[in-house]
Amino acid sequence: MTTAINTKQNIWKSSAFVTLFSSALLVAFASKVYDLALPLLVYELTQSAKWMGWMRAVEFLPNLLLALFIGVWVDRVDKKRWSQQMLTGQALMVILSFSAVQWMSQPLWVLFPAAFLMMAFNYGYHNARMAMLKRALPQNMQNTATARMSSLYSFMETVGPVLSGALLLMAAIHYALLVVAAMLVLAYWQLDRLDEQPPLNQSSQSFFASLSDAWSVFVGSRTMVVITLAVMVINTTGSVFWIQAIYFAKAELTLNSVQVSYLVAASGIGGMLGSFTADIVRQKMGLGRLLILSIALEAIGFLFPIVWPTLWGLGLGFLWVSAVGLYSSICIWSFRQEAFDEKWLGRIAGITGSLFKLLMPLGLAASGYWVEGLGITSLFLLCFVVQASVAFMLLATRVRNVA
Image (cartoon, rainbow, N blue to C red; front, side):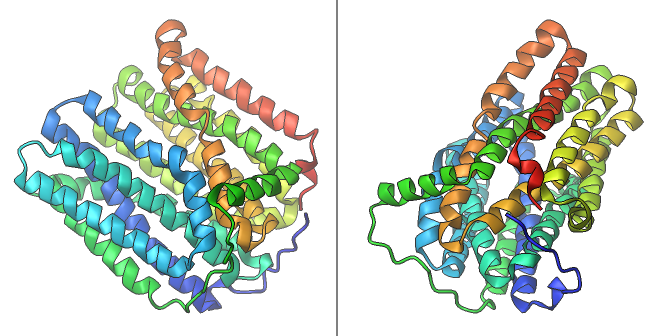
């Protein structure tokens, strides 16, 4: 597959993209506040790190368990109305969570299922947004659109410490959930400005027949299959590095919470740098070569805490890993956007979304035992070796020829 990038076109002149971007900005803000508030709220209620961990596990499950099914539904429905329904569902879950904390003696009974559904609705919204971008913009602007959308979440990582401070100043943390609900309502209203987009697929196929057809299309794209296998590995090494680097910061470097927040901000700054330069670099290198190079360069970032075990060294590592890591993410998402027709995109996103995270639970669980037995330095080295090997193996595949 080859795709030319025409940099003369200004993506901000597309009213559809501006509408989708502004709505996504509100959702990104709401998601960041929610991500920060929920673990703080759970800890405030339980004083238990164990319950905080379980809450994160529950939030992870919808993408792994429901992505396939959501992908089939998205391909059959009106993407705009579906997205608004997903935003409504999120807002209702947030309000339900607020009500439980405000008036129930045991709010965890509500918070856990609400968090599960919140993440399911969130995934449903993001899946449909990709399909709407596919229809709203020409092929040669998909990479730029993906990069600009990615910048939203990097920006929110950058302002994360500010938001954390604001939450801690609130009289009660659960009132932050009302802010989240308000942002989601505004996102619904903004999305209402998008021109109506009726569904392309009015298929009478059964659910599993539809999914089977999409699987055949996915397997038929050998390049996408190879990329997916690589992403299964690098998502695991990246997530292991992230969580164990935080442990390294707290346990080995004895950093306080404020200093750890600086690391998160450094990660966000790196992501923003990557998101605003990815389309330019791709134009010069090609998608395949940029993907392989960014995977290799990200692996080098895993060595930073070993070479320079200080706050500054770890902060630079977070910035480096996020900047070059976002290059690879944008390449992966852009290839998926460009390689498949809109009628398949929801299901392909569901299939790949589940596979992308398939190894992460095993890797994250095993990493703790590895650190206890062999030390965290050897784990960072292992992450480097595994990810660098993935980049080396991709050089021998057709991925390197993708333009």
